[in-house]
Image (cartoon, rainbow, N blue to C red):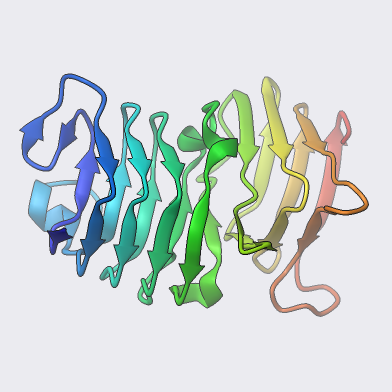
Amino acid sequence: YLHHGGVVNNQRLGANRVTTQSELRYVTVTNAGADYQQMAGALDHDHFGIRVDAGSPILDHVTVSSSGGDGIHLVGGQPTLTNAVITNNTVGYGLVFEPDALTNPHTSAFTATDYSGNGNTNRVLIKPNGPLPAGVITLPNLVVSGQSIPVQTDSTIVVGFGTTLNIAAGATMNFAGNQGLQVDGGTVNAAGTALAPITLSNSLQYPGSWLGVYMRSDSL
């Protein structure tokens, strides 16, 4: 069990420097979420149970619950997350991705056995923070007990030159009001199937609640 302070992997795990691949297996992180700025002298405020900035940590059968912020915040690196239990992180999101954490081959393997009771109506958050970086980015489809967990984004996703965005079959993406998906020289592969369609919408579910898909150049 890990309490109170959370975990950061930015060439460090906790206070000890890491020189090899970090692993958390069958670890429970509960009641974490103290202010990261105060804890580590960071430039930004952040509250989390586990945060990954760099490296290739393996997170397997990890339970993150009752965080004072987000459950798991993946900022960068090449993390592997399998068989996670992410529950009752009511203050923030259960799982947060930033684009640099999505440009890795392990993204499609993210799995959870329980994702429930988290804040923001139990959605997963994608934080584009401007145009997506160059490379191949895969938006995961997190399926728990046969149900796809909706992905929320609070700003327009811009797919520019040199960027390929893959949206997994069965995924549901909710865009904030006046935000949407803009294809501007890059490539979007959104290959749903009859049994696993892709849904792009807004959680408010009324006409005009989000921008839509804008193909300025190139096409889906």
